[in-house]
Length: 324
Image 1: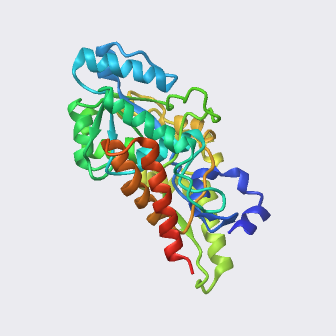
Image 2: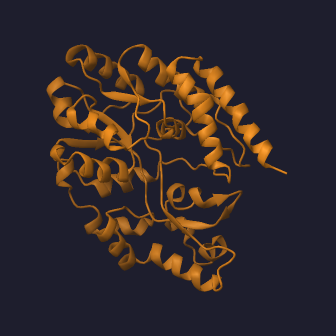
Image 3: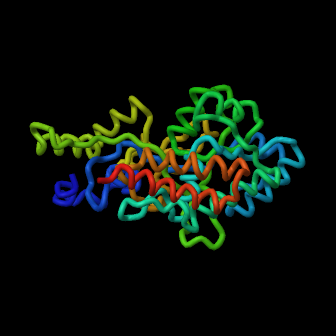
């Protein structure tokens, strides 16, 4: 895929962290992502305004202060912290420039970013301004029940999470949501206000009988405005192709989100997503990180640093056992 994209001078026409990073390994690009999963902070504006929460929230320190006051004044929470799934750790770690893997496809979950994220999230629960969520899966109907009832006022995630799931599971909250970028990490090397999570892509395998034709078709699907418009109309997913964001149909105000132009926000923040690295061991390492690091660390069984160091060792063990 990479040689043909480069021959057509198309690599820079895509938002790489969503278009290529999930389908890349050690410099090779094996597919194109069709969903621009720019993550945003999506909040119940009615609850924020009622409680006098100041927006935009610029830093995580400011978010913590607002969350403490919100908890004290309302008895509810601005945020929940999951411990039975890994996407939240992933988003906040990637925002700082970290992730599950380094450029060689080896685990890096116990670096400064992974540990810092765990320490912040665990302290939020210990200090009482974040609710420890027992949802088994991020984005489940049970998870969204807390947002619908107002027990939790803020979610972090990509469009399929804050837009698709929200409108499907809690349609009664239409018009009560607004969005902004993530609060920033004070002192972090990366000034990013977003991350990415999830994605759907199309690859061409070695077994394909007509690989050149297949590559041409995949590139067409993801770079032709008419094709992108068709996909958007069918699925309401935002594309990874940069020129599409000049199209007015992609940036119209969204009634569900208090008439904010969701597509424009997705495009505006997309350039801030940090590049990241994948590995054939993604499923095994994410689960090892959850099992040995995130769950015991968030539950308080281990301190966050020890938990993530255990996760790093577990992830390396999984790879060692599976590698000849």
